[in-house]
Image (cartoon, rainbow, N blue to C red):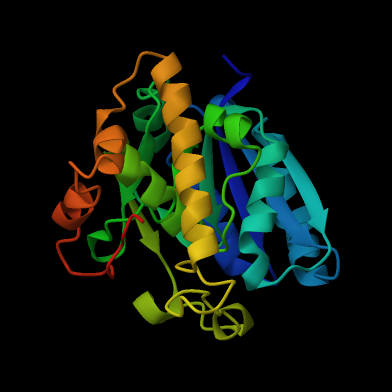
Length: 270
């Protein structure tokens, strides 16, 4: 067992109130803050975010005795989102890595206990969030996932990448935790510079940087094979992915079952 149970990975940029609301919602509703660790990433040219962390966030973490690390980055922008979180994961010391963001608000009391009750399981945990999206929008993965791969995600779309792999391996687990994604296009809040500059590399398979480009699809299948081998070593059921490769299993059955509001496009295995 690692020192902390849950490492919250959080990248922020030029936000104050949203940053505080996000962090304090996790702290205020936690069952046991001693099991938490915050790994926070801030750009080295973001004086707003740095000052807010030092004057508002850090004093609360220190007062409550909550473990934390602040990592400074050369600006990578939204297109480099996975690179932020891959680095934050490298510094984590928890059994679970919780991909969080500065416009997310925890709504469930004792959320950390719900996650803690899953410790030891090799699952990707999925909270309830906007319109019951079938992906794990705020993915929670065992540290072994990062340890095995050396990164959380190859692609900018971390939630889509991790969720796709989890569905292909049939290890997606929905937990009874509710999170509000307080995003401008969902709630009307936080319509700032960050929201305006977001660009998603998704929907143009001819673009080598696109999530659906053949190079990324092939890499995902390699990663899925690697995780499958690890699961097999642990004596876990890997028949879903093995049957998928044999053409006997549609890997997206459970994704479609969870997609009650039709929020995902077609996915495929080549």
